[in-house]
Image 1 (cartoon, one colour):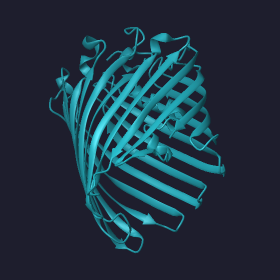
Image 2 (cartoon, rainbow, N blue to C red):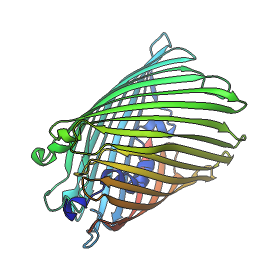
Image 3 (tube, rainbow, N blue to C red):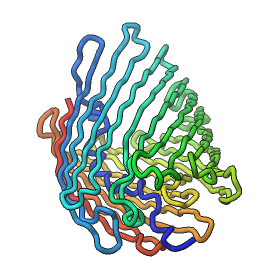
Length: 402
């Protein structure tokens, strides 16, 4: 494998990190901003709109010759809930459109759209069954590896359907179980010949069981299986199985810890790529000494699919989030994290080490209007030539959720 094939390591995940300040400012649906919504009989609608303007000093995350540009992002959407008269559940419909424009790099402009419809059935306080279907029109941002072959972004469409069954009581005194099954059909709308190797179907089945074993302590048992079926890159067809065991602890009224550890295996249907087996974990620690002050630590080890010619990516991440409400109308959120991505090739592997910092300030200008300011800084250290980079994004925004 030549060095050039190592030049991009699951950059879609890195772009999510870079856009952290944007994501926390612009909720997927207005309901997440605790908006009251507008009620008409059994129907409640939560509309929202947002505008962000900022400066990106390295749009394509390049090691040298960084492209700077001012950027504006407009987003609008709504969530609509219909509550049947029997009070046993509700229908949910949501839609969002987001458009980004770069003043000095129009090739990186994008338009993302999301729409979903679902139904949640709650026959009693202990049981819930949900079904959801959606279509997302998204993009892969340009990276150093794709700049030479693409004059624009790679656009794709995800069609998904998911159902989940839950039974039990979500506290430390009762047991509960959840079972979910979902599928995603990914197809690229741009550069079909080049992107054909990334098109795939996936089916995921997951289960979680929790039950008390001591005061303020419950045992966790979880399992997950994912099957990937690629459209043309049949050598990437694989099956992943992850088994985990752990516990939830309520250490005190202000401190909670959840941790589970296990093993994950990835088996390819063809022998071109080597099978993989890795330790896996998920850890979450929350400390909330006051209602206006909270600190959360999370860590995760998993195996992801790759958007490059790597067979797969091993990912380990560590994040610390501090949220503080200084006044009733002014709050801050800071995130510090590290993410290591190991892209697995038939030859030498490639490693990206990503350090990132994000700071967001929020001011409630009106009951339904929020002003925001954000800073995100990401530093990538890679053993692949041309893949290291520094990137800083500054932004100001306004969000209206009704």
